[in-house]
Length: 194
Image (tube, rainbow, N blue to C red; front, side):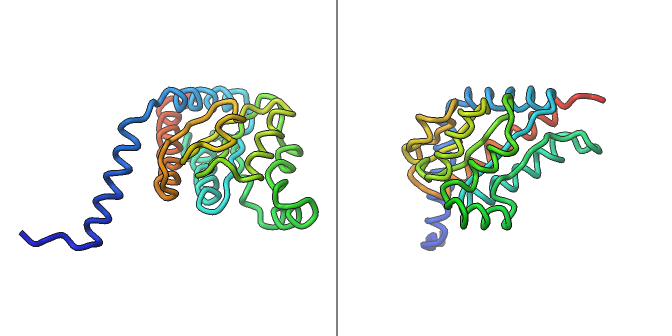
């Protein structure tokens, strides 16, 4: 048998860590998030998503899935907004108010009581993520945080934390999409038949 290359060993180790992280997880809070998104959808509320870097990309990806993928019919999706998506808004707010406020200010303008905020963060300590959660509390928006590492400050501040105790940024970001895709498929399966 041909010995495995260094790359093959690395890839196998990566898959092993991802499998362990997911296999040992308690999915209760993910079920709560799915149910809350479903109820928000029925009430025509808004779901806001935010994150930095790869987590920003994941927020944009999942907003797409919630707007269209959950219903796949004209006008049937969730009112989902990825707060990192508009570069003009981000650079304006970053320049005028500071980078810490880029998500909180958007939420202050568009958020309403009964809406949902989903923050995606590896560390849970990014100041703009913390400010978004604080802003959500001020206006009655329920906050969820999908987190890696120790969960950071966001784990304590969010109304409900979905915390994967994994000290690997890429695996932490993978879990964000896994959670989002699980919820998307569940929502599609349970979509209203209109």
